[in-house]
Length: 49
Image 1 (cartoon, rainbow, N blue to C red):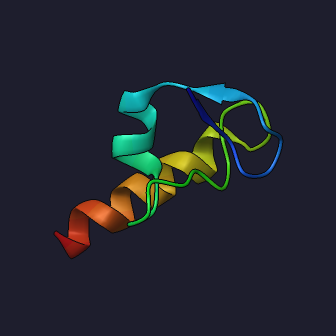
Image 2 (spheres, rainbow, N blue to C red; image 1 turned 90 degrees about the vertical axis):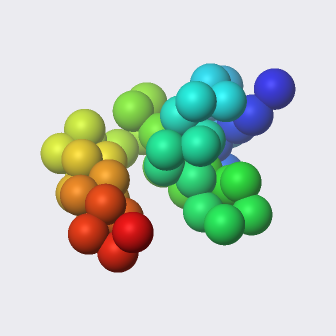
């Protein structure tokens, strides 16, 4: 079971695949950060790919 590094809340494996770092760690989840921030990370990663 994956957890957020910041608040230790459960996150799905799919969430980790999309928002996790290259080591599979999630540093912010919907429970502890604004969804807008998560969307910005996804946008940046899409541009880098």
